[in-house]
Length: 296
Ligand SMILES: NC(=O)c1ccc[n+]([C@@H]2O[C@H](COP(=O)([O-])OP(=O)(O)OC[C@H]3O[C@@H](n4cnc5c(N)ncnc54)[C@H](O)[C@@H]3O)[C@@H](O)[C@H]2O)c1
Image (cartoon, rainbow, N blue to C red):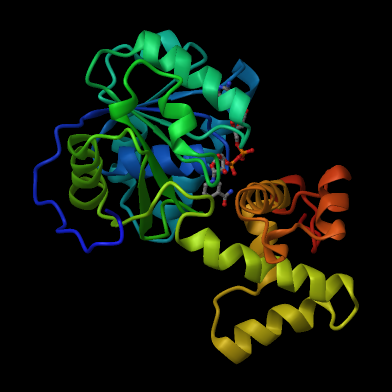
């Protein structure tokens, strides 16, 4: 039971070769975290072009970390040497763990899990970074529902210390322990366990707050700057809710809200019309150069 306190595992991790599917905001960050921790990491994208964008994203992030003194130049080069790239999931045959981080779309993710189930060896863990899709749906799409788990990183993955582990109803305790050993003992993150319920722990608390801020802006109660400054200077949040929504991606915020609303029918989880219109307009936040704020 997740509601009972669990002992953190002190098992050594048996995972050395990791695959990451999707090299967008999260996939690139997850690949960086794994490679910086000494793991052999293979990253897959849809096309050669998307792969180049992802590779550049990763290289820039590592160069920034080196320029800021967070890692040495030798560490940056060694990390890059541990990363390889492909557009063919067939190359994941030797992976011990694959973490999927593609668009938040159930059909796309389900298809990827079916392919991963075919190409990876028995015993390999298949994980998703999904923010809102029930893990059990991805688990039952495979022939190894006991080895499917949610490993939910936070954005930006190389910076944020938290990882939520979400076992599906079908996930074995062994899989949870193996994932936990990796996250805690190799990636040096703080793992918390959450039930397979839309929003898990953090988004169930965070998303209604973000939606409230968007409703407040939409109804003209305060400017975007005053809403963000209110929470930054009044509550010591590092980033106000509209800036944070832009960072997460408004499509991602909307799709998490939709899935939480679909599950619980709570009005607090309903996406406000402005959010939906901004998504329709392609103003998705930082990643498209425009959201509640412009980004150049
Ligand atoms: N953005 C966040 O703050 C955040 C935080 C935690 C979890 N997540 C979750 O992480 C996942 C990815 O989100 P993101 O923000 O990185 O999205 P993103 O749009 O930045 O990246 C998604 C990437 O997936 C690639 N992709 C799509 N289909 C693919 C396929 N079939 N094979 C390989 N690659 C494919 C796309 O080309 C794109 O590069 C989503 O499930 C999201 O809910 C996002």
